[in-house]
Image 1 (cartoon, rainbow, N blue to C red):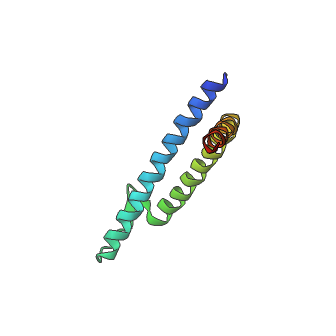
Image 2 (cartoon, helix red, strand yellow):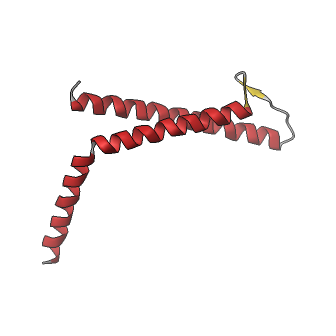
Image 3 (cartoon, rainbow, N blue to C red):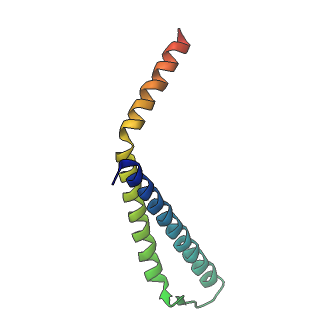
Length: 94
């Protein structure tokens, strides 16, 4: 697989994991709001609050792994951009 194709799939998977983090976070928020109002909501979509929390942490870990992978794959681009920016700042100071 070529490097651009790998970057594309890492980005797609990173976006999907971000969506899963957001959905599980919203579900956990709704759980807490319902239980704070005196409700006794134990299940949402057949999953308990405890397992939603575990899923949320799992999705966060997967998301962080994709971010780190993305950063490693883009390291040379980041390094080159930093050099260009620093050169532009030095020229502007002169």
